[in-house]
Image (cartoon, rainbow, N blue to C red; front, side, top):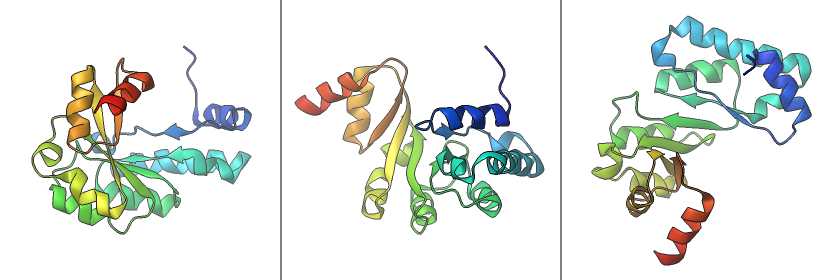
Length: 170
């Protein structure tokens, strides 16, 4: 493997115009200052090349504070809200994303009580938000999570064909 710096990543994005990048910066594992610095570097490196590149960066945020922090740096048009590192209830998560047009996807673990017992997908559906679950290994997990309202899936070995088979026979 070749290590890439942010500039290398954006150079590849300039060549590969259909390439999008989802960040996985784990703000809860580093200081706010380091999180800010990461996103400032991304912004600055993209601006050196083409500001449009930032529209193909999809930050994954882990709490409300991180959302505010990155949006102060750049108004990202698409953001994923990942719930495993927050203690927000299903109601609070829905309330938080309700007025944020750039958060279209909320991710949860397949075992998350907010998803299984507290109806997260049902709370988000009227808001036009989608729930993605992680990480699936088996077909029955896909079927179970879909029954709870999951729209998308992070999977180890399941393919789009597996999902089409599920959709056909559900």
